[in-house]
Length: 146
Image 1 (cartoon, one colour):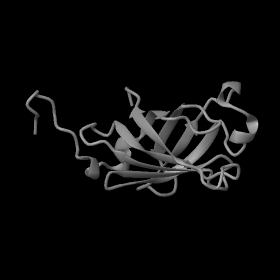
Image 2 (spheres, helix red, strand yellow; image 1 turned 120 degrees about the vertical axis):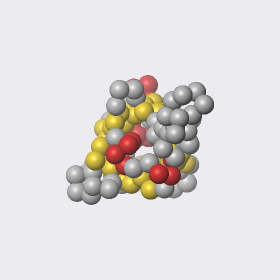
Image 3 (cartoon, helix red, strand yellow; image 1 turned 180 degrees about the vertical axis):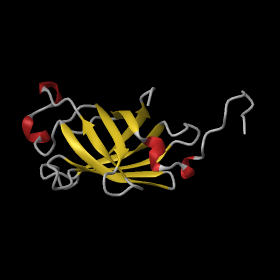
Image 4 (cartoon, helix red, strand yellow; image 1 turned 45 degrees about the vertical axis):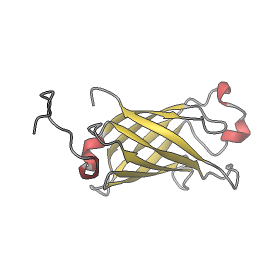
């Protein structure tokens, strides 16, 4: 049904399907995780084995400006992702080595964003993370053209 402005209404966030979030995303952490940059790029695609799930990768610039090597030791500049979108909630496990989980993402699709914005928290669960690693707020915005 068209909205008053004449454009089509968005699919409600809780009804979005995994295929509707495939594409390239910009990620912004506020504040930046310790030893990692405040910005990242994420590609979300269809999971190769589980068609109702998503997979992809997150890329970060781990140059010298992001802190000392020890604080980012558990993270690679490109890490694998796998997870699910259910009822508007996006959960992703991040793995820098393809074996163990090094980060967890828990986000919620923003209502009215037409599947183009997610807000949530990321947690460092790598071997170099402190025992009391905080949940770091993030915002993801889908890059136009996807």
